[in-house]
Length: 198
Image (cartoon, rainbow, N blue to C red; front, side, top):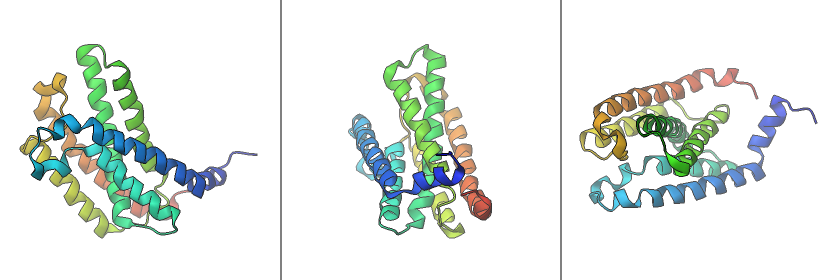
């Protein structure tokens, strides 16, 4: 069978594929919260929701997938998933590669994180055509995302990379502009939705 855009889109939106993607994201989400367990153990309860950034991003996407599987849509979850999956997917890759440059190694777990976080960002981009969120949803997601940055870098709740601790102010600056870029990606996706190929 010839591989065309239509065939790829059919596969990406087929219920069986969405169910498989949901299982993968659900397992990744569970592992992500487990991975953050040590940091949550030393975190004040008021900040719990803001600490495990990547698993919360994939949790948003789990809700999106559940809605699609049952023939519904949840626009707020869609935009939260898009913005945070791309943001934290790219952020984690930059942090791990930066750690590699600083230390010379990140081990198999570091490379696993690079691959899985890159996949997080890619899956969010793949479904740009399917999202139905509006500018109002983007505004809410922007508040959530930028507020999270404040909690992370003003109140010190960011994910901990001990080998990069001396660069925290630079990381915070980079993270802010990455958030802005991802918010603009969501805005761009609304403006370009009708032109995106099926």
